[in-house]
Every structure is written in structure tokens, then in C-alpha cells.
Image 1: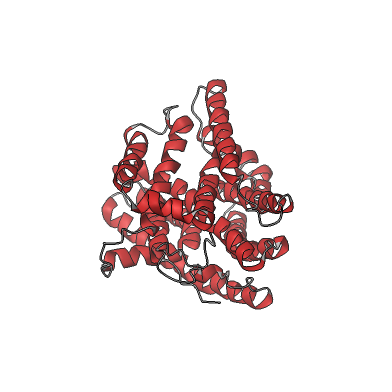
Image 2 (image 1 turned 45 degrees about the vertical axis):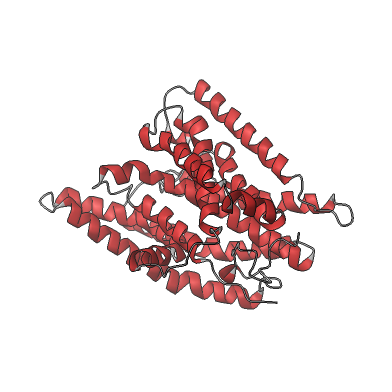
Length: 380
């Protein structure tokens, strides 16, 4: 089978997501810190698309989905870097006598931070994604078991997504009505209020794998401009309203993931007549950040706390200079953590339990142009 390339455009989107998030916790730039939190929602849509694509392509390559293989490979991708951060946090708390609740430690250990408590403020999103990683393969496996011969086993997935989307929206509205006083933990973090963002990525991945002609016509045809405008308009409430507005944490989440989903599709489905130009150094740098986005996400908040402490002790230091140094240091630490921990363990993982067939996580092709042969996606 043909080796698949990593798609540059999706690395750019991951880079944009981590770039947004890294501006939140050291608020030198008010606009950046205000809108940066939406980078998490972009991560959600991308994760839904990328992870389901791995499962869909495994099914297309082998006719099955190996659950143990998937869970083993996900665990070695996510857990070592995360538990390294948690272990070093415990060492710091012990030597510097920093108190924490046992409940918060338990939440971090079993990845239920978004329900029972957390030590780090940003790890709640890892819990949402972890719950999704556990649920999605089981759902897809159940769909496969119910298929008949020569039938698309996932053809009910658009209806499943619609049910998840409506259910999550209703739950968010009910939650906002029961808890009128805003709380980030209550309104932003629970998995059952946010998982529709990831399932929207799954829905797009299903169309990309099994209904590509329809998606090609939608995104690359005359609907491209209206779709682009709709995506921009859908994001406008998130840019104009404060995060504490009930519109944002109810229907706003739906509009945001729709906007980011259109951004994803427009990135991977190009207009045929468009000439591909070599990306500039800024875009290449963002894509490079995307390749290290997981460890950058883990370590940017500890770095923000370090530089927040420095800022309080050295008020004469220019906040923009401090932010630049924080940003550079976070990049260095995140990349170092990836090279020392994440990448070696991924190599070990691929040796012990390689991906099935051509379904290579680090080389997954998402080329959408139908003229490229053996792309490994829709067989329709």
C-alpha cells in the first residue's frame, strides 16, 4: 500500500489552535487572551476528525477495527507525557509545600478533572478528549457488528451526530437555566456538554471517507464561498460576546464547532484552479508548532505560572518582553519534552504494536483531490 503523507494544512490548524491557547494565560495582549480559549474548541474538532479517520481507514484497509490496538496506541501517545507533568507537579508540591486536595489529584490521575477536580487549570480538556477516545471506538465497533453484507456500517453516523448535537445543546441550555451564575467549571468543562464538538469532527471524517463526492461538490463547487461566509458568521458571537454570556456556553459552542469544521474542510479541499504556492516561513513555523501541539499544550500553563510569578516580583519588566520570553520558553520546553519523552515512546509503540496496514498515524494522508490515486479514503 502506498505510504501516506502528513497533511501540512492540518498541522497548520493545530498550530493555530495551540497559538491561540498560549496567549490566554499570560494576558499581555487583551484580544489574544480573550479569544485564545477557543483554540481548545479547534482542537476538539480536529481530534474528532483525526481520530475517527484512523479508525475509518483501518476499517477500509482491514475490514475491522482492533480495539486493543487502538487503546494501546492511544495510551502510549497520551499518558507518558501527561503523567510526567503530573509527577513533576507532585515533586514540586512536596518540596515547596504547595497544598492540593486529594480529590484534585484523583481527578488528574484518572482523567476526570472536569468533574471531580483538577490541579492544573487546563487539563480538563484532556479529560473530555479521553472520554471521547474511550467512547468512539466502542460506538463504531457496535455499528460494524450490526451491518449486513456489502453495507456501509457507519451510514447511521450522520443521524447519530445529529442526536448528539441536539442532546448536548439541550443539556447546555438546561445547565445554564439551573446554574444562572456563571462558572467555568460548570458551564465549560463537563464532557457531556462538550463532546458534540468532537463528534462533529467524526461526522466530517465520515463524509470525507465514505461520501467524498458529495463533500467535494459541496466544498469545492459553487457552495465554497457561501460556506466560507457562514463559517465566519458562525464564529462572530464568540468574538463579540464575553465568555460569561449564556449565549456563548449554549448555542455558541455549536456555532464555534461549525465554524472550525468549515475551516477544516476548506483547508483540505482546495479549488482545482488554485495554484499551490510554497508556504511562507510564518506558516511553516505555525505548522511546526502543530506537530508539537500536545506537549506544548501540556507545558504552556506551568510556564505561564513561572512567568506570572516573575512578573509579580519584577513589575518593572515590560509585559510584552515577558510574554515573548514566556512564549519562547514554552516552545522550547514543549519541544524538548516531545523529543525526550513523546517521540521515543511513539517509536517504541510502533515497534511493539504497529498501526494496521497503511493506517500510520504519523503519516496519515488527508489529500482531498480526487485526481490523486490511491489516497486511501473513500472507496465509493
